Image 1 (cartoon, one colour):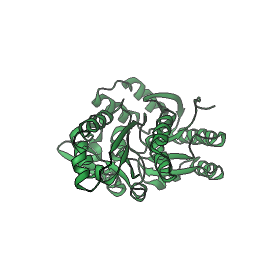
Image 2 (cartoon, one colour; image 1 turned 90 degrees about the vertical axis):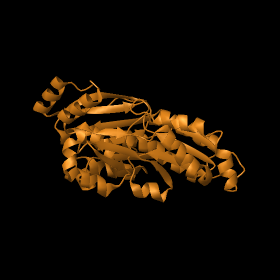
Image 3 (cartoon, one colour; image 1 turned 30 degrees about the vertical axis):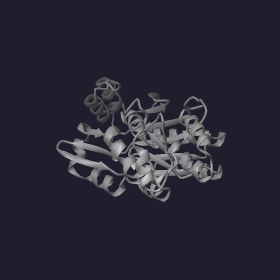
Image 4 (spheres, helix red, strand yellow; image 1 turned 90 degrees about the horizontal axis):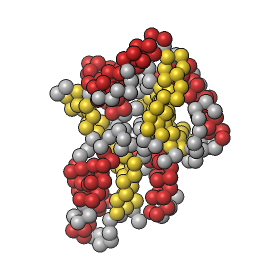
Length: 314
């Protein structure tokens, strides 16, 4: 059986990984003023954006995911003939309409795909499963890497479905951002009051950086640490402890809102890499998507892994 895997642009995996593993991308478009920027996970284009004049306006950006009709067209024009079964892994539905759009598209093609497949010489049924990864950015990537591993190991469709839904509900994502004022401006533009002006001003004045935890569709601060370098070093050290204790899947995914050389130079990162290597855990690195950067700002770090319930710092 030909099994396809689909992710959206916010899933922080390198373009080379997606291409090598035949993972299909649902692009997200970023609108800044009158300019439309397609987010195709092009690392060079994303880094060029950071150096360009539009980056100063990114707090006012609008992210536009594929509509149900666009997803329907993608499936009917390509995926129903390229694959027999598709797993579509989306950004958490609590932060984007993409999941619901994909579900709607899935229903709409049920009565349309058969003639398309038959014309291509396929008389067998086509099946689509949309899975909410319940997380963001690097944490989304954990489910995608597991999907690739399962497919390549010869897992059956029921085995993949059960495993991917289990993993998605156990992925932990963590994030440290550099600029709370940016986060506040971005949240205000989107109508999200989770970052107040007072807390942003106080945090910036004291150089306090919150560590945010994403889990099962919710995002909340779990620590406040003085200094960005100190915050990421603490985060990397914590993740290293979870790796040593044993993860649910052998992967840790990291993304950074800038050049990866800057990520690799952050305190504690080299030790995390060494810990992953010594425990047989794959560490994937990606430049954060354009979608992610306009939402959380330049220089942010996100990291994800699948693990049981835990408390930050323990």
